[in-house]
Length: 580
Ligand code: C2O
Image (cartoon, rainbow, N blue to C red; front, top):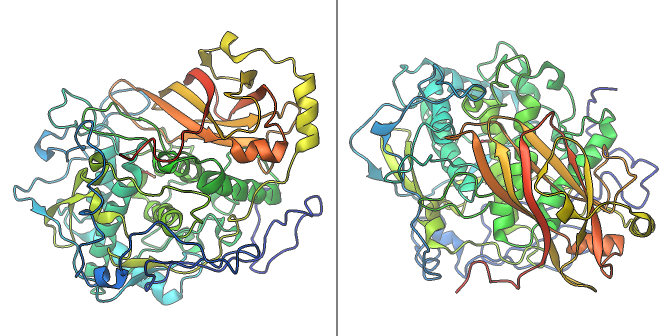
């Protein structure tokens, strides 16, 4: 069966996984507009009576919602460490150049440069009088769909040179993501908002203005974008409203095989929809919780003025986010347009719906994940907080915004409809017996004999642990050189020699690297990822071994990735990375 109409009722778990139901008990928390400092999480059977404190500032947030308080904002965050460089500066719009074709390196015919307006205003978040509620795209009413289409239609009918026009808005993504801008004063170094800690903030601001423009066009200031709830089995298909060919939100450039299929966040090509759902939930658990040792593992690695592109994508960006782009992009088009390539992604209204859920992941991670799982959730580095971008607001005014003003969605005036988080407890079942066999039987070569490694087929090798005995450790894949113009993806498994790489819902799955094709100056970028192994060691009972067997499974065809080295390090004690 190639596709599945997901039932709205909770189906029973597959019998082969009795200990780990496919659809665990519904979790029951979400964003609410009145959340104050001590958020309570009553999420699961196991911690339902134990509220978990989040890492938010010690301030009553209701004040901020009214725009009265500046206590929890930048001011008290910036005190920490000395900058080692400077924040990324906004682009010089008058130096915008044509984007480049992602496959050939030639100039694209698209000019994605915005109209130029001399006056730039520093944007101030307006006071919030009424919270916007972003709805789950699978649950919206006919009235909502009507209004949403009306807004998009009006956006398409704006004059072509109006910066709020649909194509102009799409081009924002092209310009910031396809090498149209250089970093000011950095000798031709590309400005690139992906694959780094700027990923969440940039897209949050992008959607923020997009949403305000749509609201203005229909005279409804509380209009809120829908989010594609692809992290929940009930949302794991393209939201039906996007499939109506007569709708303004329709786009013909989509993968025809994906229109009604279950989203494949693992991109394994597995054809069993129930297994794909199980893979998806495992990926969500892994990228939100299990695989991250610090804030950068989730948010992305530091990107400052003068940093070369792609310092390292966060777990969510390279995982579920990339997968949805590739799932929807049309393979009949030369470069996977529209969603499958950064320069064209914003031409499909579904892009903003997808990114509303990406944005929701950031909010969930910040405010709703138990802090014992993810200890440090704030980046206090001024090079992060003071990085800035330019956008046109709903009045076509060019504004400069900073990262520090977008850390809190409530302060920005929007929230998300409550839905269940079935991945929250989706820890894979222990796999101890298999791991034990693997460790005694392995004949895999040592990693240092194979690297640097061109990853064009499955690779398997042994990596020594940092420390014998129980340990809190990370697997680091470093100097990963990628061809940025290609779709690339590989999965990482530990002690999983004989297993089925089409299934990810097992303890041996350690994480993923993946990228959406895009252009950089010389088509190449060098990047690093880190995967936390601590829970995996427990689940496979291998903490006491000297080494582990790592399997890398590429999901793309042909060359494109060379991995410089692989090693295991001890998880630095909390705070090393980012605090004084
Ligand atoms: Cu800017 Cu999903 O990409």
